[in-house]
Image (tube, rainbow, N blue to C red):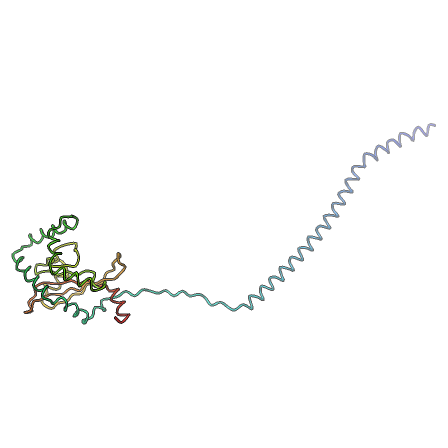
Length: 260
């Protein structure tokens, strides 16, 4: 009886201890299962990675074969085309002779002879005053001096020549012996040209002189232009004035290229 009583507490203690160890045993089993699952997943991932690497290798190999089979591309070279700037060489002696022909007409000579007689007694102060008046009139509706010049028979003739040139002559004007405008195809910025090379290198030099100025680029029309200046003479060969014909070099070059 005494042994039975001693065994009972021992069994109870063992039962309690076993019951308390059950959660830890279950956790250990779960960790073991999880480790096995991770191991299996790792093997699957490694296998999948191996398959991907193999596929990538096959793709790279195929791409390499395609590139090797593709024809080699020639390097693209863009040609830079520089627009040729027309020069004074276009204004040949024959071309200038053509200008002289239509300037050597009665309306030019008669106008200059009349103007030279009228302005014979003008001094520099008078010329400066007329030039200043002209500049003022370019910005005014009241233009008595400009109107008198533009309405002259000579200006009408020059305007017709300009219009008939088809853009070859953007501007034409004729100066008397004092360097004042006697006729023009359009309004100039000033009235007196005596202080400029177009007059000083022609009329002031002598009869039969031609001076061609350097070409200049015109932004408004995107063209190159040059002025042909020459001394004008009467039938006796006496100088009576000068003329300036502005030439559209871009248009002249186009015509030469086209054989016109």
